[in-house]
Length: 451
Ligand code: ADP
Ligand code: MG
Picture (cartoon, rainbow, N blue to C red):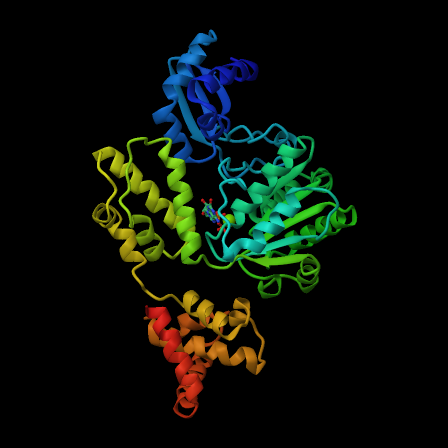
């Protein structure tokens, strides 16, 4: 079977499964090979693979048979996340076909087909990041370079970057969009050095229209990789090519990142994704439920279940999604309505894990919000009273409300020494005795955090 046959088969499948299913589940499949009657496809995620295997495998097999391909079985495997190096070197056998045609020479990392703007739920915490990503995806003249997205784990950085890539290539299939993690950037750089292919490495990276590097904090402290990244970055900016970068914190807060790189990064638009709030979590859950409804037509959810989850699972969106997936799978298996009770049973471990245990991050966030300073200043080095005092408040609350030791707390405050934490805690204790405003603040913060 050829790529072309698969193209025709897909048209047949579109009729069989309907447009929605087709776009969500079939379109992202990449034909890998057909041997001994087994047709293999790559899928963006194992969830995608399981789903297709369960719901559409038979349709696919029949359509393939109909087109004359001798297929007895279809199999799905996840596209490997570590992309093959840019230089010619046979990829390991398990490696999958690239996600899109123009990735082939670009060696872009596979994009998750579900990470689009359509599936991204916008709320207050990510409003600005979303708007900036949209702006970049529209193309046209580059208005800020780079776009720098930062925020904690599971808040949607990667999702937004993939969405940008999808959108740009949808609007302009000829656009050369290169998406990869900073880790892959380093990996390829090292390979290129080893294989004496550094010129083609440079050419590749300087020939793209849009470069997206995810989790750039990874290359901090890796000197020659940083150096190369810096040159690539400058070359692209000079040519007015769009760059999008993500990290887990603001450029100035990334330890081991060269100053000149940090300051170049600061020239663009820096946007942080704030931790989710209740409304956003509920919105995400509702969207996902809509999405699942098509798959499980008989499925019913009792009122209050989503609200319960949005309230209780606050850690990150990935965990929230995992909870919902499990609920649906379980409910459909046992053929029951999803009630609060079922949710509590089925998700006991997740709920226990996120059981109102106050985390240091939460404390930092809440305190930063309260005093109207940047979250990054909590871990940053600034000594200004306006920043240092709230930081000490957060240290005090971390000591009071979490079981963490002083050295552990120190680590979470940008690697500070435990004596610094001890000093901070003492300071607040002293002040509280005389400063009733501070005492009130603390009582309120405490209530909110424990609430
Ligand atoms: P990050 O890269 O910031 O760690 P991801 O982009 O990988 O986070 O997001 C983690 C998961 O949560 C993904 O499955 C993503 O689709 C989902 N997610 C995060 N934010 C949103 C959102 N606003 N709307 C829909 N899904 C989201
Ligand atoms: Mg990510």
